[in-house]
Image (cartoon, rainbow, N blue to C red):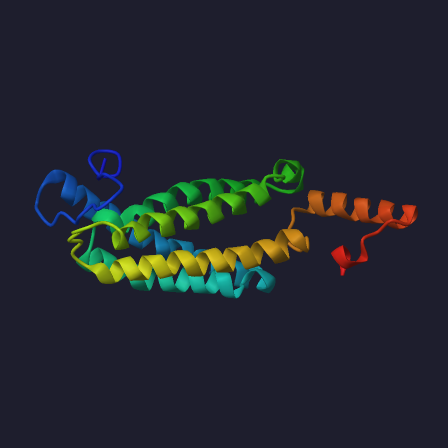
Length: 207
């Protein structure tokens, strides 16, 4: 309603600084997104209080600390236009992500419903590819007078950095199996044990 489903072209969408209802709605939506970044910082606080220090990774801290800082400038100077597309995608992904977290918080009986964690990370990776692809259009569109090009560079850099960090997370979490849900870890260990008994273990895979 603020633009992405009612008028934006997904190409060279400019910031509307007028007092039109849709422009004001977009500005308000950007502020709410900015405010949500502070709420998400509670993740880190809960990890520390629960002594889950292994989850306070560089990726986690970097993500939660830099987003509020840069989005303040976004809300202040560029509350709308093509620079907000990544916020739209991020909100959709976070609905899925916190649904997963909600299931994990419901106890061991719900472990069997957590098999799709790997697909959640896949969705996050697709998000960063889409963000980088969308914002990169700016460099190929003729005469796109986006008011604050600096945000184009920041968002593009965001997309690439987070894509790299999440690919690194994918490698350690799933290729090495360090962050799989317990039910899947058990399956991986059972497969490993069977391989040992049968004498056909790929040692490089499990080092």
